[in-house]
Image 1 (cartoon, rainbow, N blue to C red):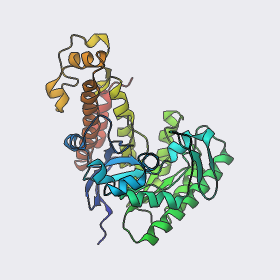
Image 2: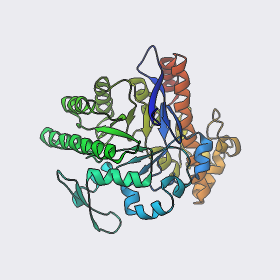
Image 3: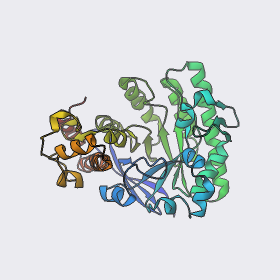
Length: 373
């Protein structure tokens, strides 16, 4: 029996929302799921124990960043990424396609792979799809992402077509290389295609012919308007196999997550909840607030009266505002704890609603109460 596999538990009767389980040797991942971003082998300001306490089941790290710092050899000497960062649960490692895109003036893509200059010291590097998989094998993560080009927006049809077809070829090389290693891991195919529906369909249909363990929707939330984002998601989902998990890369706002789950997406990651937390933005059941604002100076209520997290049980908005204005690290820690708890708990509540066939009612009630800024 395979150690890694996806099981659909239930599909909501009135929408495309799904509840499932990704089985791994390091633990089960209950979907829909939000994966806290631990790019550099840590979720900023929190310990792994706190991430687990919040309800996190899987962490996302970045093979590109870890390759540059501290280096794969050091992590290997530590016993692998799990041992290095003291996290026992599953880890998904992104390949770094988005980061390579952001280095546009300092990189060059060829059929063989990606040339780029390090954002740390300007040193030159070249990575092939096979080498990116080898890096992830040495990290010993659980779910792998192949090397791809996260296509910038806007881009011409001709550019997107060339890039998408190259990404497909890289994905097939990655899959072939991993299978030859004889180690069971999950490898997702990444769908590109920009904002062009026919290219999205082409990529989905080509990748679904192969034995990928899941499929990621990449190249979204990179500058296009939100209406276009969801049109592409809605268009693409029907071309993906129902029995495989669907990972929507880079989406993390509460109002967006609930819409994406309704369309049938299972997995999410985004740095927005933790990044906003460090600047004083807090998620609540009534919408996002900026807790460092003067209006909260004498507000001795919790961030969210409906929240049961450690921060809301013990601290007030006034205290958090004081911490931010005093530039105390504890403010960022407490707010990050709360925001991640809010997002992870939101996904858990969605899952419960799916299992009870009331997801649409849950969505409508949540969006009615949650005021979008």
